Length: 159
Image (cartoon, rainbow, N blue to C red; front, side):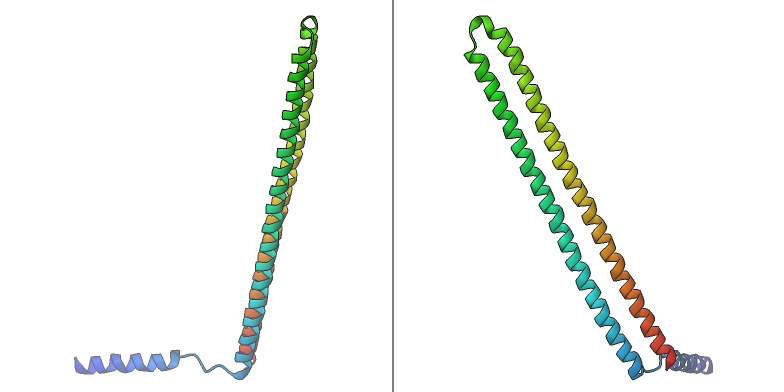
């Protein structure tokens, strides 16, 4: 039993000695440092691109909200003018004035809806472009990481 135990322990030490990785050569250390530097640069570029894309999308959304608010206020103004016109009309011309006011309100609503749709469309387009910019930046970062790992492996293979 003792011989078996001694043999197992000796085998464990022997395999641990062979399983150790060799010490890194100066070329490998240099390649790893360069790789880490390249990865850090790529990640910084990605963060900058993501921030820029987010800012672009946020600005577009704010612009859309502003345009929609203006369009709505114009429509409300047109509604008020139409109501005033109806109120000012003579009793015999009231029906004619109401018809004219309804037409004016309808046109104002249509115009406001069109502006709101265009504003939303523009904001969505900016959001999609921002997403594409983020994806491109992430892909470039991934490429830099893979390239850096490849360079380290090449350096290790040489020595």
